[in-house]
Each structure stands twice: as C-alpha cells, then as structure tokens.
Image 1 (cartoon, rainbow, N blue to C red):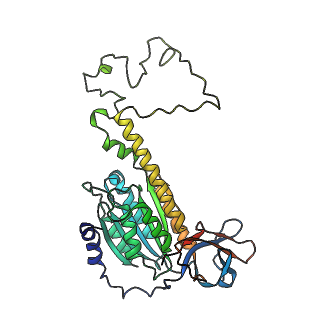
Image 2: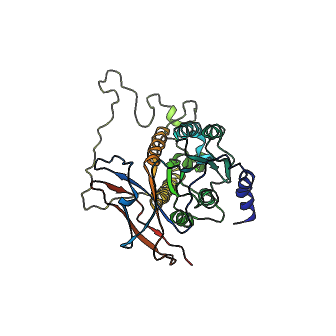
Image 3: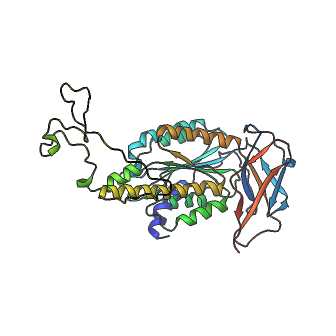
Length: 382
C-alpha cells in the first residue's frame, strides 16, 4: 500500500482509535486458534430455537469429530460494523440511505456495539466502537455524499475494517456493507484478497447492493448521445415537432371521426423462434447503448462479488432496487443477528496447509435443523 493510501486511510483510524473503551462492558474473547462459525438452529417450521445446549452440538472437520470449544447463545452481544458507500453514485438516494440506516440503528439491541464507517475514495471512521446507539444515529444523520470523490475504495474499506477494527478477540462480529459493489481505485487490496481475508476472519458479512446502473450509464454517456427518443417540445429544430400529428415515439393524435384513438397500419408480429433456433444477440450500437451494457456488466460482476462475501462468511446477500427494499433488508439482518449462535472449536490436529477444510455442524436434538451457508474454512499457511 502506498504512503498516500496509508495517510488517507489510517490517519482517521489513528485519530479516532483513542475513544475511551473503559466505558464499554467487557467483551467475550477467543484465541487466535479457534475456528468460528455462525449458525442458526430452527424447528421444522423454520422458527429459531433459543435454548440449544453445548452438549447437543457436534462438529466434524473432514469427517473427523472435533471437540466443541464454546457455544455463544443468541443473546450474547455482537460487534457490528456498518459500512456505508458515500461515493457519487449514492447522490440521488442519500436521504433515503440516512433515514433507513438511522431506523436500523434504532432497532439494534443495546447490548451490541457499533462502528460506523463511510467510504468513497477514502475511508472514514465516522463513529468508533460504542454502545451509545443515539451517538451512532446522530452521526449517520450528518453523512453526505461526496460528489467530488474520485473513486470507491470498497475492497480497501472491507479489508481495513476486518484487519484493524474487527479483530479476532471477539467471536461475534458482523459487517454490514451498503454499496453497489463496484470498486474504483482500492490501493493495496483487490477482490480476491478481500474475499480470502473475510473467509479466514470469522466475520459474518451482510452485503446490501443498491442499483447504480442507470447512474453509471448516464454520467458516462456523451451528452450528444443521451436518450433522445422523446423530442424536446421547446426545440423547433427537432423535425418531430413540425408535424402536429406526431407525439412521443410513433404514436399519433386521433384522426377526427375515427373510432381508433391511435390509428396505425396493422403490424404483422413475427412468430418467435423455435426451441432449436439460437438466440440473436445484438451488441450495443451507440455510445448510450455501450455505456448501458458496460454498466450492466459491472453490476453483475459486483453482484457476484458481494454474493461470495456473504457465502464465505455464512452471511446473506441482499439486493435492494429501492429504498423500501433497503428497509426490508435491514429488518431481516436484525432478525438474523438476534437468532444467530456462534460455535467455536480448535482443530485437532491443527492445520497450517493453506487448504480449505470441510466442516459440518450437527445437533443431536430431534427435529432441529442447523442453518449455515459456510461449509468449511481455509487454514492459514505456515
């Protein structure tokens, strides 16, 4: 990582890391050797069960039974880091983001601690670890989109928070990331490194993706090639304004005395191709189409990345095409955190081969299911 990046990303950390931690209640700690899994136990109707006992939990690594180290019940506190993208692509929805994020913090159980991070082409610790949820809400209220930012350091933000702020000393750690998933300019970290770091960290990640395709397509399209399907009624040079019968598209004003409100010649609709006919894929033909296509591909790649983050951490991915969907995603995450147990064990023998090892968590109680998306862990190399 360059000196510029260290100055930009860590100066804020150094300035705010001195927040008094003596006021916080003592946190449960785990050793660096413990493997951490977050799981839910449900009945056959999918309802969470809250009275699981340690002796009921069985752990198998590569089909070999392991000894349970600790079982943290669902009411044990979480350390929750909330990361909010404030890059220019959030400009049109920034007010909704603030309002829904404030509501989310207000619903957080008071036993949890929270950390608020925002990022654009820099990473900011807006509110360091605290159990004072009102302080977090007040800080969220002051967040604004940085329209002049020249990038979105998503990978860098995730890695720095995982390495510097969500340490392995506490077992119940969650990261909630609201972003479109598109990284521009991360210095010193890449997509692969961020996924591997999360996979090894024991942090459960809940990515929430907003849709920035229209924004990217709009700002990168040359002004002369932007959507001109509809004529400007105040532009006399537009030939579509010279014929009073012409309006938007190809529709026309009704012909006097006609029963058809929009009489057009009959159109012959071609039959769809048969099942063996290969689809005809037309590539983008204009700058506008090219930018829309590029935005679509970036969004799809970002979606795949965020889904992987959730998968390797036993979290959940949420796609939010609207602010209402963001509210629903936040509500589901609150429910997830309230139902999650944390299971830890120390592998025997200890693995240092850098390989992925399969882990299965089971329970002896009848009619109880174990819900976890994480099927293993990657051992650290020597």
